[in-house]
Image 1 (spheres, rainbow, N blue to C red):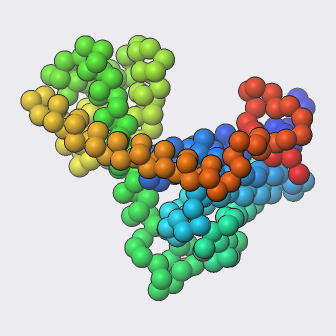
Image 2 (cartoon, helix red, strand yellow):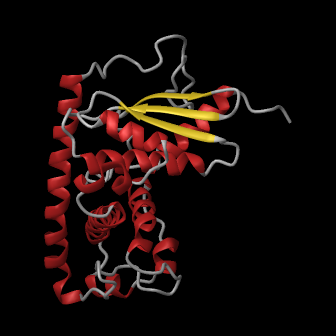
Length: 255
């Protein structure tokens, strides 16, 4: 078997970064064009650079995304070290210094830190769970599923469904976040609320409408972020201008 090339390593790193989402928008940082550089050196050290839509994006959000990138890439067994650098941001120097030293958000910002980063991460994971659940429930109802059947559906039964491609993606995305609120045991209820309680058939339509409000707000913020990013940076220019990138390969960056 041939040894992995630098291009192979970069592709693995990009795949890990695709699992990291903007905490508020619940969209991958790669799809949002936040990541601007991915390099792997001869010692298997990974170097990542990223940017955000505005100069004043909240420090805790910014640090959270950087920390999530670092943790995701460190899961690759061959990675010896990960450096993540935030560019063109009002707190870039402080955030980058903290990241370089392996400090937590609280250690980096000291008395300026507002709240616990783990609590913030969970808050947004729960919101992501709710948005994904609302989207999946709406899809299943539109496909003809009755409320009485949905509230009794188990995780095993949900995974056994054979929806179309769009529905399958909604199921997969929901299952990624389902463990945030309760253990994902096969015989557990597929659909529960953020407190882990079972949903009720008679109140399901109202419940879904309330969750959709969270989703609409996120969709608006997502559109706003993309617009701000386009206005601030030239996101139309390909990240890798030299040479063609195979269709299956991520847009990695050449040094």
